[in-house]
Image: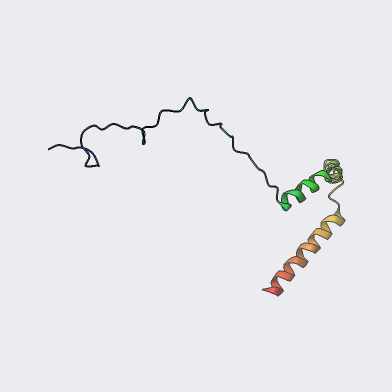
Length: 98
């Protein structure tokens, strides 16, 4: 058995130019053009960026709260009572809406 590949062509054949024209003088090599990257920033990202720029006020407040917690003056009975009242109110609303 003889296997000749996928095609049914047999034997060697030459590859040449069509029309027999003379080879042109050396042509310039094609220039490589690098693809250009693009970035599109969403409106949500713009909002986050703007919020980040105004973060210094928030950072100052956060530092005040951390200092109060460290000093033991942040958790007062009044704050605890207010938090419990809000939590119970929220739970009551969930029960009545279910």
